[in-house]
Structures are given as C-alpha cells and as structure tokens.
Length: 160
Image (cartoon, rainbow, N blue to C red; front, side, top):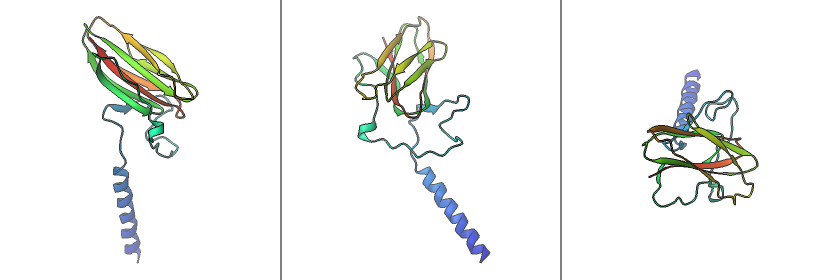
C-alpha cells in the first residue's frame, strides 16, 4: 500500500512539472532584472499569472519610417530589461515608452541615462520618446521598473 502512495505521489509531481513546462515564458529578448528585494521570478509570495487580454495590451504605437526596431517589450509589469544591443557611432537610438495605471515607471539605460514615464490611468497617453546620440559605438540595455499594478511597454530603435 505504501508503494502505491509513493507511485501516485510521484505521478502527481510529474504531472505538475509537465504542466509547469507548458506555461509560456517572456519573449527571448525579455529578461527579469534583479534589484534588491524585488524579483519577478522565484519571489517569496505566490502570485496569479498575468493573462493578457486584448484590453490589457500595452505597447508602443507606430514608429517613424526609417527607424529600425532593436527590441521591444509589451504589456509588462514589475522590472524587465531588453538588450544588449550595439548601436554604431554614426547612429542614434531612441527609447519609446508608454504606461497605463496610476504611478510611474523608471526607464534606465546603464552608462547613458534614464527618465521617468508618468502613467495614464485611462491609457490614452501615447507615451514618451527620448533620442540619444552617443557619437561612438555603444552597447545599450534598457531597463524598465514599476509597481506590479502598472502595465507598461517600451521599444528601442536605431535611427540612421
């Protein structure tokens, strides 16, 4: 009888492990960034998964002709980053960001700078765009961090 319980328990554990593998992960470009006391993966509290619905998609709108998308994140919560990307010295790069909710998301570009994005509770604000021209080849990683109640998106583009 004890062997039956062990096999049944192991079988349940295998099913749970298989189901866990079926959960989709972020886009290959998205990586959680670690900051003191805050992590989107493996935190101390269990949270229900965020399910994107057509009403909950937050992304940067149409970008100008001629800009090349290096990377983007849509419908994000908490802290995420995109990159690294190498931007040639003869090109500029832009970071477009948008946020829905009450609060703000901090965008940081290590070694370059950063800026806040003030969120719009109604989701009608088209967001902000900042252009950076470094003059030398630069490796760029863009990080966004906001409260888990906020929904935000960013796009990083190269500008000739």
